[in-house]
Image 1: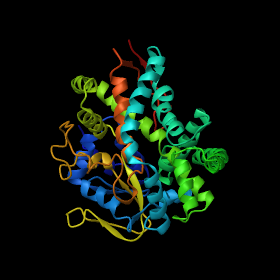
Image 2: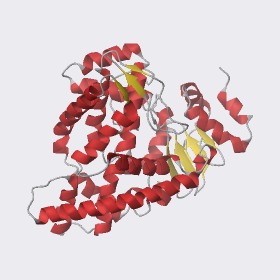
Image 3: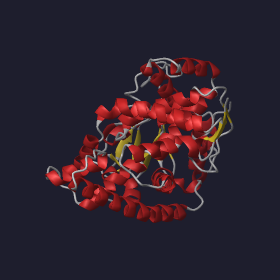
Length: 413
């Protein structure tokens, strides 16, 4: 295999980021990642500075005072997730963490298992797995567990989709692959107007139900009880914004992860056999380990991005030490870091008992995924239901030229 770094050096600088992105998102980036970690763990381009080692990726995520989430502000405005060390961030994140009751996790796992089986059974051996399953399941969760009652599933899907697409896949450095960035922004803004109208009515309806003494106890009701108690300072508009975050964070990320886990296992018969045996058994923890290890080999997000708020160093103290100027977009290539032996023992070995605490699936540090605990029971149960389908056959995943799975034909039985 030719040395990729030599090819990169022979490429004009304006075209280097596009080339690097193609390699990162390609079908087998590990040989390039290994070369980069060994010979050039920090690569600079006009669009961004990329880091490939575990130590740098974790530092970028955990040093929010240096590497901020400012790139999310044009997409998420005053939402706390687009802030770092602020009072609002901690207050509202704490509030949302409190109302997502972890005591519900066993019930959510059982609900997911039953709902997934019911959806697939009703499909009678043929389904578009994305719209009919991997997106529909988290939409049902939002409706039945998060309180989005009397909602249109297609509208919920669109609201989540355009917000996720704009925030994660429509940054300035994505201009090398996104043809019309302004259209994605327009779609997000238009769908957010619809979402705000629905959420405002939902909050008002739930408030009236509580005032009438109805025994509602979903996250929306819990937020309203907190607001009424005076224990937190939050105006109604911000409460609506936080309720919307429950939806936006749930659908596309769940769908993408389930698709990747099932697809990777189907492509590896020995691991698939192991996974199916565990799926049919009672050991949830063992089966969960297989699913999350499959996602280490096929993560839905292969990198994350931050903005350097002041001059900083990457690969500090090594022969590759690189100064990053304030204002630079910094990309941590977490897919490479997941296979760095400095952060993971025997990284090329498929090990379902591997600890997930130093992974990147749910992020690290201040901005770790708010819904991590729910996802850790929902994702495996959705994968389990798929693997238990008899003689499952899957076509190629259709991304329709974009970054996320849009359609995937399954047949079974």
